[in-house]
Image 1 (cartoon, rainbow, N blue to C red):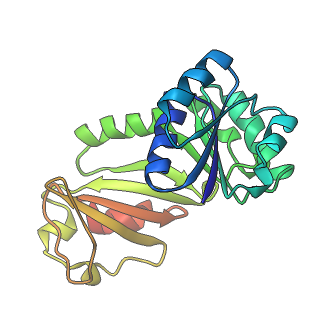
Image 2 (cartoon, rainbow, N blue to C red):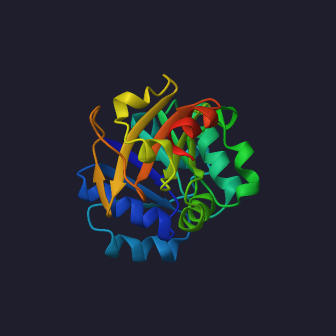
Amino acid sequence: MRVVIAGGGSVGTAIALDLVDRHHDVTLMEHETEIAEKLRGALHGVNVVTADACEYSSLSAVDLRGADVIIAATGDDEDNLVVSWLAKQEFGVPRVIARINNSKNEWLFSETWGVDVAVSTPALITSLVDEAVEVGSMINLMDLAHGRMHLCEITLASDAPAVAYGHTLDELRLPDNVRVVTVVRNDQPMVPTETMHFLEHDHVILITRGDAADSCAAAFIG
């Protein structure tokens, strides 16, 4: 897969190295000449280009039309929105992923600006803090599909119906708008099966469509 990353900061470089390790074709765009030169020596296997990703000519020069994914990972929300809009509207990139630096700007990161997936680092960190103290509550980790779907986590308390009554996943009869993606138990991810039973302190990761809080509460929150 061919991936273009805008932004040579810590986030962009970490993503670039991970994707190269996964054998993707990665181009990283960094507008600061000095930083780009250092990255060329440090990011082996990554095509580092000195260019401003907010400029149409720069995106054209890296052949963005041939990219499968672009990741707008700069430290500036305005820049990430501009990159996303150009990528989708002018170059037709199939998948546009954008980093949100300030959670107050989250409402802007939508299909109007060409964003397919928005990732808010501050929101994820906040969710991890919430997770540590909010056993028995549903934590929203990430919005997907322009807010129509949600990736959520529930840390099960002892009085959660799924724990207290020993129901299997099949017996919980979750509605169609709720899917259990994985269960993390003792720091180990588990593939959910119909016969799985739930234990106190299990971390249940779900994808929900629309407002499914009540549906989840009936099974996982006491």
